[in-house]
Image (cartoon, rainbow, N blue to C red; front, top):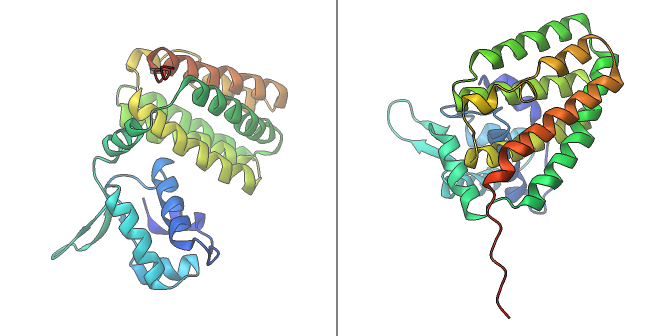
Length: 246
């Protein structure tokens, strides 16, 4: 992804815990598919300026992400720091260390309905005609790659982030980025098949139609149906931790 497009999501961080906050923010952008496999990160000096910290602080953040296997630094020709190519596999491996429980999925679904449902309702009220046209194009693009789990995850995240942008709320957009990061982690372990991704409730036609119709209440309801369908896709595969014996 072009650096000028994703760096708009970076703001200066506070000095206390800055290295951890930067690593967490970049990890979130990777999880939200704003940064994807193969994307090149700016030099450490540039990142330090964007985050408003010392270069050494960014260096510590890069070390954390490198240790987690999310980025890699290449030497020689084409040198630089990049998101690892097979990033979804690595995210799946990290998620497997702390797998989602039923309670986690139910809580994430409730959070999605609260945040993304409100974003959908606001988009129905506030979106420009150009914004609606872009939303429809993104919806069709997601349908076109439904057979490819990774491409679909990127397209799906992009559509929901665009709807959050149409809401006109920076806070909702930032919250949506966190939600898409969580969904990438969750779906890395339970991506489903083409059939599950192709069900009417998993696709976005009804949601996009409600937003286009400028019906906030319907948009909120359609999003709730969509979010619950995603939960239903994952819940059958959740393995609850065994209860400790007395």
